[in-house]
Amino acid sequence: MAAQLPVLPVKQSMESVFKRIYPAPLTEQVRSSDGNIYMYRLMRFIGWVPPKKGALRYLYRFWTCIPFIFGVFYLPFGFAISYVREFKQFTPGQFFTSLQVGLNCYGASVKCSITYLSLGRLFKAVQLVDRLDERLRTDSDRQRIHQMVARCNLAFLVFMFTYCGFSFMTFLSYAISGRPAWAVFNPIVDWHNGLLSLWAHCILEYIVVMFPVLQDLLADTFALMFLTMIRAHFEVLKDHVRNLRLDPSKTEQYNYEQLVDCVLAHKLLLRGCDLLRPAISRTIFVQFMLIGSILGLTLINIFFFSDFWRGLASFMFVITILMETFPFCYTCNLLIDDSEELANTLFQSNWTDAEPRYKSTLVHFMHHVQQPVIFIAGGILPISMSSNFSVAKFAFSIITIVRQMNLAEQFQ
Image (cartoon, rainbow, N blue to C red):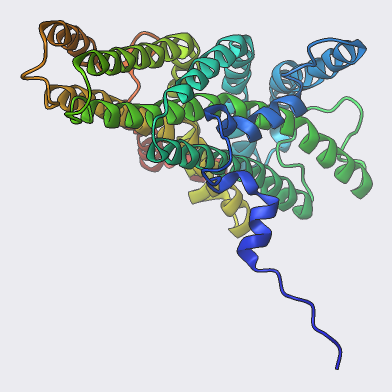
């Protein structure tokens, strides 16, 4: 009887393919920046992280220009030219599908440019967080960081599959129905000239659209990944503060050094946030300005002009738009709670019978931790769930106007 090959468990095979989405064992050395491994790989693929030296660096710089030329410059103009040249040939569903993506494309161009120009700040901020790894004291601290690294990598893959899934489903559903998904102006191929021209136009259009999709993915996730890292180290810091002066065998000098170490860790966390605050403020402000209009157009498309497959693609686009701001705003809310909890933990620590030097430093530390870590979008709106709901509600206003004025029937 022939020997049977052992069946590889599904979990084990998944771990081998997506190793980084599972917490590494404590015996393996892991840095906080490892939570950005998949994001860094996409940055290299899209042309954002060139080699440090050598002739390959200049060739890579040429590749860097390609996504920017198509995604940041050509595509916004392509949408505008298409609306002028072929407005009468749009079906209502195709027009809204193109308009919702086109409007988001203009915002994505601004966000991608801001993010690319802020890469130096991002790398410096991540290096500051890596310095906090040197302050991990226990296996519990290291386990928390390992879990954070896995969570960041998993979150990035979820974002990537969602963004790419929406783009592919939209491309395929419209191409099968005999029309390009976004009808972006193409000076090379006219999709009206037969089936071959249609598919050539659709494929070229899909390739061009994928450039801003991947760039927008990076612009929407870099801040979320960073704040997730910050929150993990806030949790570690809270544990360290909670354990201050609990060991009676330790000297007052040792306890004072541990408190100073907590103060320095908190300063590193704040410095990291300050480095990325300008980029976060600008990118989220751009998205806040667009989210209501884009959601409104997409919901109109779903409710009035889509069949099942096109509606499913538009529904995935709704999820994509919500993912651009809601997870980050929710994380900002959690970070505010972390700051408040750290202040309470510090006040409740064992300090009442400490030496005067310890108490003086603790009071100074408490004064700083009572100031929550808050990000402001464009210097106007606090980045929080309440602000996100406020700007997203504009979508329902658009739906109400369309229903009351019967605009959907006039588009038919």
